[in-house]
Length: 97
Image (cartoon, rainbow, N blue to C red; front, side, top):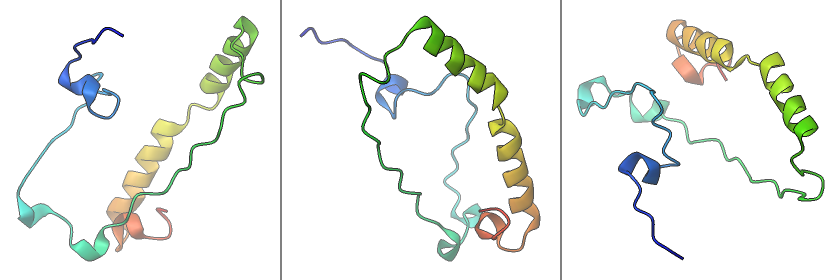
């Protein structure tokens, strides 16, 4: 197998630097206290059924239609951020979880 050189973003977590804006700050004064940190949610991989998940034009069209119909991630993220900003416990508040 031939080795392929990849750029650093492609090597880090799948390379999802497709125009996303981010900011890195090392100022400990603006970091939230440790007691407000929450561990990441454990997501377990589900085994794929290769025969059931064959990609056809119809399956692809249905997938795209479902994505367009359920495109609510931006609204959910904005609502979560707004709730987290106004609640006393921030993102750990029961309304934000």
